[in-house]
Length: 374
Image (cartoon, rainbow, N blue to C red; front, side, top):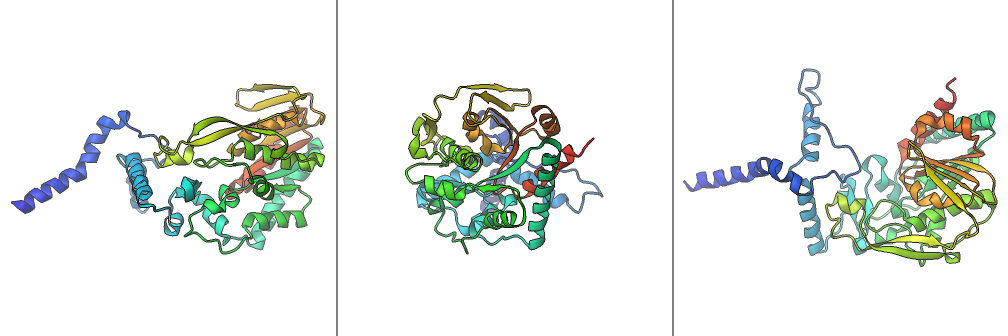
């Protein structure tokens, strides 16, 4: 009888989450905070039977009842025990890395940010040549068709700038990353201007916080530094954060990494920063179009027009509107040829975070194909 009772209680514990979750999911945190699309429920058929087990496992893991609450409980347990993220967790797919002083880092699994950090994923020569070929093709097409210059800007990964907050259990095997390797290769084998923000960010972080503690992105101060790296290339001038006013505008800021842990209401003591006093004499007009592009015109001394294609890091760089007469920030590649035809940019800038390995080739080759379409 006792064994039957234990079995019955165990069975109830197994089915209780699945049975109760539909009734409470609208009243608890059940959102997707992982910056990716969850797996869809697979269909079982003769055609899919080979892949079905893995697909169903992915689906079940993504849609696990009380998933956010379980993640939060595990995080709170680790906080209580003083346990950060281990190297094993980092290598086996944990989306969020718990570092020192509650700093959080993004383990972009498919983008190999872990390998970027420990420097064990350098390119093969053929890979470097293939990436370079794509950039050179786009550079030549822009120059030939529009007289426009192509400039590449890499936003550094967060852990490259703040390694002191990474878990002690994760130790890099070297200091030369694949982005260092790619930048060196492009500079020595092509004439494409390639700008890497790592050294400028490492210098400016003394006295300034450039990335959010609980988010994947740099903040407005980091974005300002990225903009100045671009200005140094175009103008030969670089304005340091020490030359402007950096003001905290909010002090209860969380971030996407905290939400991935379902801890947005716990990890929320970060600050939002704003740069003030930069080029106060420049007047800027701003608008947004139906594609949510930011379009700026100003009385800046530099009369050039820049078409800037960005990932999500670009939103912190909107201050560039004070540096050039016309600037469009876009993530809409479909209208790239139309923008070039109507805007006639003096320069096309591709900004991308360094972990976005596959995106480099896809983006670059895709833009070329659009220009090559009659």
